Image 1 (cartoon, rainbow, N blue to C red):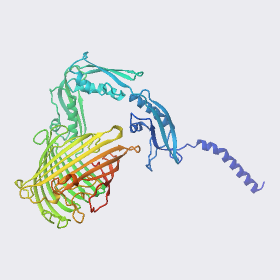
Image 2 (image 1 turned 45 degrees about the vertical axis):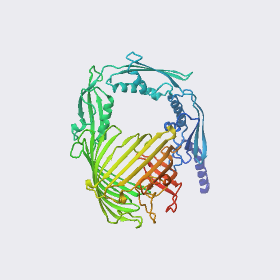
Image 3 (image 1 turned 120 degrees about the horizontal axis):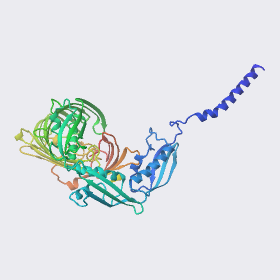
Image 4 (image 1 turned 30 degrees about the vertical axis):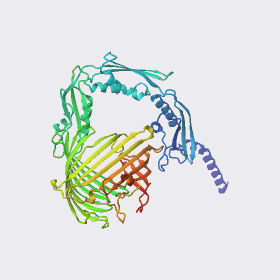
Length: 618
């Protein structure tokens, strides 16, 4: 056989070998989840969901949706999807829907390798609570029943849910623990009738003996003195036991920001003793902390912040901070000293000293300030504030035409102001960064007088109210109203521009540029006014996807008035618009678009504005 023939035979044999091995190789090759052909879930869509929230349903699923996020993966796994269907059935049962049925589910192609998962549900009627029977110390009627019944998480006529039922025992035990009976025993039973969808709940309580607080011991505080911890306690040895006072004391210790960890242990619960010792275990936070951050907004552009905090400064729980912040609008450097338990256990002192430079649309101002504020906590939500403010201001550049300038608006003019400050804030919200329920009422007064050594005499009043009403799975309704006025007193002819009111911007009336709603000079620069009225109405609603996004529709109104609320009805300006919120741990990233509904004649700017910032508008 010649060489050419031998080569053809060898090549033929190699081809046969590869063809023989190829199927086995292909079968053995595993399919990777990163394959470009892997189906991606762009959306999970529910039909027939009326009494529960689709957002809550999506949270229990392990099948995720990528939405329109380009770099996010949400691979479809049939086994995981089948498990999710079982989770949906279990969730509905836990929410009281024992006749719920999964009608169908389908994977629907959308485009390319993207699919939509459609799930059709028939909820059926819910299980309702028909009666709640309570026995306390074998008595069906006593002084306990009214208060205990109203505290329980399920009432007759309400939908029976597993979560609320499991809370029954906790709520009952807490109810009696707050009233000196921490050793109460609870027996809980329920009878569910799936034919008529009615539930009957039976609660039996044995109160046990009356108990008192015993000796208090501390552990873990090495540099923080014992008396700093003990003075935050809202209970003392020998007092009737109250579990809420333990929780309140724990929160007060956390609020000092001196500890990473705080734990209260009630000892003697398994003994016959009615005097219960309390052991407090703490872990101290770092002595010093340095923080830094950067950001961007349409009004102040690039901004940065550096903070240095010293905890337990010179002992006694004091705190000392040095803050530096800078943006296109404001640069500030300040020191902040905080003294808890100032002249009393409910009082705290906050002192601020520093310098700021404000470069605003109509003027520049440099301010050296020294402020002392004493706050007295009246209730967990209400505080009384009183203090003194001393500041030295210098107007560096007033960018107003001569006709619009007041007597106090002169370049390089210096103003020394000594004023008394007072406030009575009432704040009761679920989350300060992104509130969804509650309200805030914030009144403030500033009085400056020659009696205090001030060169400018005035009385400045502001009152702000905010409210948040949850709408279940449909979102949150939010409202805000702010009013303010300033009066010149004694020999003061006009108020300096840096003390007057301004309106417009991302946190004011959206649709107008920053501070440019109100009186303007011939060049479109804001003059400011002696009175302010502005309000905002918002509807914040969750978006179907992604879960971290929500939409906002708003209506704003307001204006600044040269005198004291003259022509309010005719002078109000209205705007409307919408926006998006991307929810983060430090607050929502906000994008808003506002449009002027009744712009003033001869406006200097567009009838619409875009805003980008961090945090809710209010």
